[in-house]
Image (cartoon, rainbow, N blue to C red; front, side, top):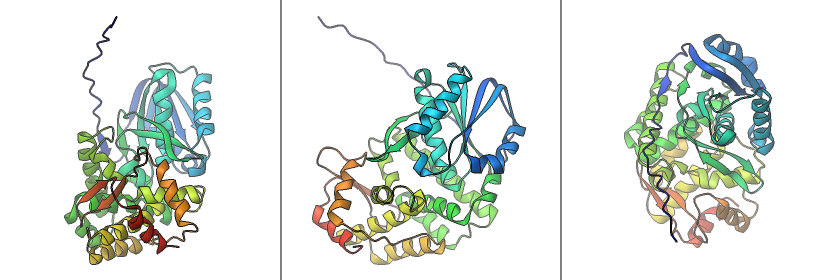
Length: 347
């Protein structure tokens, strides 16, 4: 006997990204703001002055990538259970990419899914991590290997939060801006080469362009089954670096910057990118004091870690390699010898 379960339906999960000073936000439900001690000390009072709800709770988890784990997820869940949250309640992710990813994941599993809102406070989160609905956390096997696609109801990117960013955190966000340009827009990359992102107006342009680019990609491939994988340019290599350094040696954007340089070296070796183009990318990264070098202790071990990447399947490793500026190739057919030859130059 065969019984068909008909579940075909159209669900619109569209939302808006507002890049402007935060206006008053009102919610007719219980709300929990998930944040960390650093952001809380700097900006929580500002957020609470803009926020109105039936009840407002603040859940604080430790700061840093090394705390992007199941223990932090449990702490968020415990706060929600203790406050008797229900399916109409709302989470607000108030922080960088780590806070956004974990808050979104918690929202996706609490009572089988509730709404959440992103209020990103870092450049990296405003231009990339807060948009697209990727959520998750890290474990000992790798980065974001446990997660879910769960779109926010809205994203509010207030430039005010960027005024307190440390130099390294700001640069880490620039790496993601450069990523967008290299993959999809040669004109945007050329603009970045002459732009001064310390200028508020030019920074706002860069944030808007990056969000527009990511929105265009996500609209075509929400669940990362094709084009969206290109947004992982630099990440395949970078995630191994983060794993090897236990998420403490580099900020995410710094590891991505090194990963982009490694991917560009691979592109040059394959004849997909001219050396002068690779040099231009490296020069732009260096202008913001982003790292472009890394010492690989064991090339074979580094390569083996690629198999834990989410994009890899069975024995095939998927690499995101630029094809000139403004173009990108997603390939699971790059010869191991080519990759290892590139990796050897970092050993």
